[in-house]
Image 1 (cartoon, helix red, strand yellow):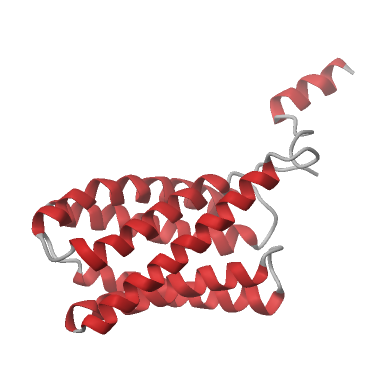
Image 2: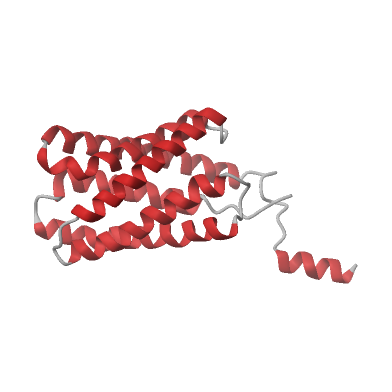
Length: 198
């Protein structure tokens, strides 16, 4: 049975947010005017991630455990990004929010472990690495201010995770748009109308 699969949309958004995050940590965080400039972008990305994440979490539109693996982290980090963007725009420190982000990072590491252990997705190693890199970056994020090494490590991990999510998004678009993938999909309303005519 075919199903709605819009993971391409949040995958592209995650890619953008992670790459912006790498830029922010490496270059922009030290200057207040730069911090404020990033607030709108993080807020927009967070809103998309939160909406799609909560929809995945509450409605399960895609097969089984993928709703958990993708939906819950999207909802969690999307919400934190929206709140964090407000804090950035007002010049408020991100300390407490980054601690919540670190807890979400631990969850991403658990998801990465599950993906590897149970061979979830057709790109097991890529998915494991992208969840693992983003999770480790989130765990280290609260400690970036005290060490140049940690700051650089967070930026590199975000860059790697962003690149992996980007490659995954491109592959998903190519797969979803290919003949034989979703070309037989009929919306629920149209299926109901066809059944009524028969």
